[in-house]
Image (cartoon, one colour):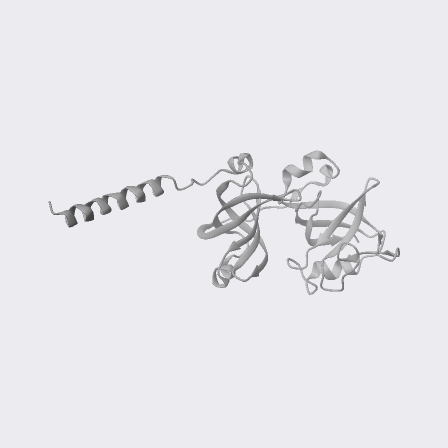
Length: 240
């Protein structure tokens, strides 16, 4: 066999072997329990369903997702604007990225998204009874409901009482995140209308701006986590 032919054959066989190795090492799709058990910073692959879109910017999408077993927040995944438009509520996707944690929020980062055939819209889970308990974090990122809450005044940067705050410290203006306090059984909790998710033109943003201390309502949203529970509220039903 001529030397050039031998080299070419060796290169072909090597390429095939490397391709087979790469194929064999491709990460398998995880169950939700396997995702939960995975180490932080490890590569993960999950199949899940879009429940809401927070934002798209410079080719990256941030999504609230959930399947039948649990919820996963996907932060700044590579996504074209064209594909982002296809990510309607319930759309099935495969997410490949790295499990990460930021101030208590467990999420997938540095990810890519593949759109799959399938549809699932999660029902909001009533977690009212879990407020103030250690068990609540086990429902992180799920679509949830809190019932029978009463609005409590917040205090702005100047020490004045106000029904809500633009930004966590009151330093913002209309269009920024809305923060408000609500109580149940003598305990007070903070909730957020995240402006990227539900901006100032949405019904929920306007409804919170119209609340007065003592208003009673039910809340629906996603159980985001930041230094403790930080639910991102998407809907409010005010008691008659």
